[in-house]
Length: 203
Image 1: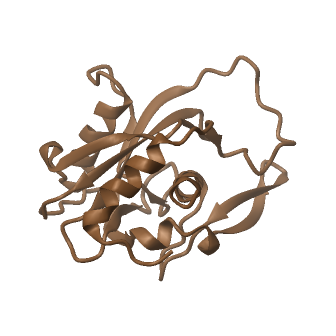
Image 2: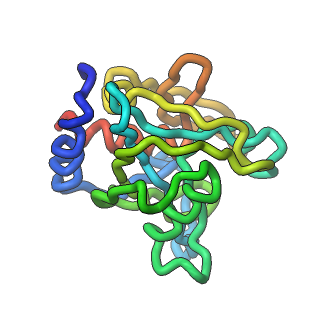
């Protein structure tokens, strides 16, 4: 899709959020993978932070530290599991964004949420969409975030830029969405959530 003027992004996103839709999952492209019927998913929240303080609207993403035990070096949204002190996954996403990249909560105008996404690691992730209207001083959390970077909103909301790829996982071939950008290989839950957003924006 063409570049979106930052002044138009709110309208585009509000329309996308108003559309009906269903939950997504890391298993969407792998219907043959059996899932436990009584599995218990842990609530989590991620922030799809759309920066409209610059001439071109951009989505803020992070590259996880290579030293982390889970998903080292992968691309992700700011966010994480819901802690006991968080009122809901939305609160968790805002808290984690402040902790992970230094994004003040009062800099985020929350517009709504996409349907939840189930991950292979047992989380039910709530993707929260928010606008960032003012610049802020990025402070990557030491030991967890290796890099904070931005991808044009038009890039990650263009369905034609997504590819389906595969790799071996637990003895079988697992398929997933990717949307590469420069040196960044965006895939997994992040890629699937962005695909869900792209489908809504262009519907």
